[in-house]
Length: 556
Image (tube, rainbow, N blue to C red; front, top):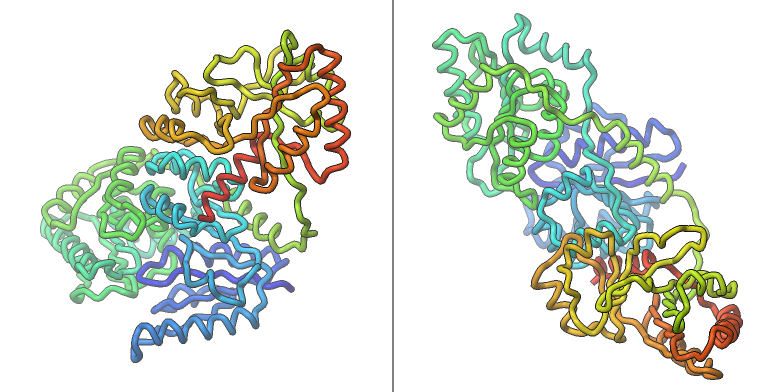
């Protein structure tokens, strides 16, 4: 049985490990592949309840960090060579140390990426960190991804490169029976349950977040107990919690680790949590009133994200100040259960498994033909539809400009002779000056590709885009402009040969307007069609160029 290796992030969090276990257990249940999780977590708590094979490396504290890292990398490489994975799955965000491991060279790679703030995503993209992956599955919906404030270039890369797929949020969805068990365990008399969780309990910046959060909530719990409030508190500190000891009281239960945290959050009336990706996703599936207490985060932008979530689903954002927390917890206890919540993403995990299966299957590897997007400008008095109807076989994949376009921006379309009008174009051929329209208007029309009439795009195109950036940002490419000349097909052949020396895929604009008649156009096209049939060239649509150039933007 082929092996799939899941390389999980290590640090002070647990969400990435819980997501990896969720995926690995689904792979194991399918029975076609053998999942193995490779980790370096400080706590083994999460792994104790799974049947998935786990290799957890120890943290080497007694040697310098450089020696420890080199030792870990060397042993990890030998382990991966022995496992011989058919697919390598990385989690959360790209890790540069995996890129240079000889055992992983040229193997199919998949990244399951949780939400990143716009700045962090843009930085990783501009550094070329996404270029090593065959597929990247974003654990968000397209709508939620759009709310992160990503740059136009990043949105274009996600939409046009063919590497990214939205699979929706991935988290465990507890059953009604599991939720009922948690209520019975922690609030057996039907008390209103307040669950407090700060993730795995570690501190991103050694700022004592966990200590401040739990002791502030302990203060609130003591106040409510003095007032004879029936509310019960459950503190799930996480195994990495290093703050002052917490005392259990008649209305406070302390757990270092709760294996059924998702069910406990769903059973709560109030969830006071650090809004990390996994815990927040699980809390949102339940009906608890949310009190979100952001901490310093790595590539998540928790303050902004918490504010968006509170506005979208209801709830409040707070600090670890006891007075602030007391106000929000009291108000939340007085409210009914939250009714606005996302639907469970039952199909997301299945999409992930299908992507893994597809990469694990042996495929026939081939070297692609040279790709050419050929744009034809009709002759004088010749309509695009008439030109389309007269094209020889080898030119039927060519594009024809839309004669109804404006002078400074010509739409490019593959016109169907059966259609009453050409389809909306995904590419436009720019004139010699900046269009009158702003870039966003063009992007909103579905245009993904801007074609300059020059081999290299002139500076005004970049300035026009930069002065009013659009989301997504259309890809800009240069083209080779060729004027058709009667009995001058050799000029066309030579132009394409030179073009392919520097560009693949390539774009050529063939202007037929100089040919004297319709019959001359047909003769010219017949001759170049015969030549193209003998060449290792395939004609492609704008989507192919958009995909290639956006992929290139991931590999810089």
